[in-house]
Length: 266
Image (cartoon, rainbow, N blue to C red; front, side, top):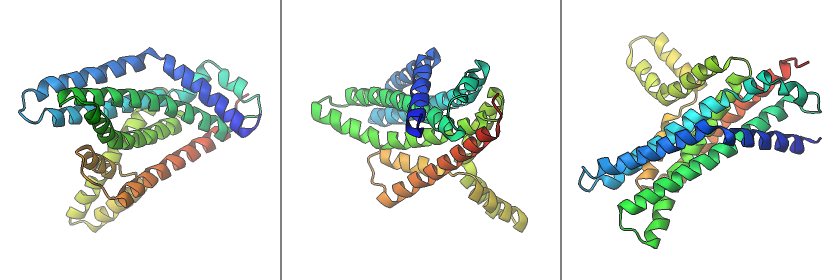
């Protein structure tokens, strides 16, 4: 079994298992309910209904997608250990990095399908709340597509973090670690600013080190907000943020592969 076949087989199996999880569909229904609620709230704000719908809908997609990524990702390795299928997998010529890559790709594809479905639903709601024409439908979908791509890129980071923590921690602790890293990544820039506002040089230096070590997802969220309202964001900035996030994704997957390689599976 060569590397591509091994990764593809594990990815396909992971995709099928994740799609069968009923809790995912409950989260999707919840996101749809949030979007419908946004329509009702938007009707209370004259001229702001579409903007409120965009805000709440995109926030719901990011939140629900993140929750799915955390809980599904933190169970990637644990489920295989619990069912002892991991021992069967490693009796074949499968390496640790192939196992991690297959699991990650399978969950990423599943999440891509979920995010795309919620994005299409949100685009349809935005289209209905405005003047529904065929031309406006394509425009609304295109407008939502750009920030939705950044939402998915952020979720790829969450999956990578959850995958890494799942290789050495229990599901509960993996959830705590992943949520903690995800939350800190959104406020690490603010922590750096607070450190520079202090009069303590040691604290300032410490905040700079923390900022360099931890990912900064706050910038990605800001660019996503710019794109969501149809404003132009420099291509260089979007490309830099995308490469920046993917750099952390590759690092986390590399660490997950190293930990998996060090584990002994009889």
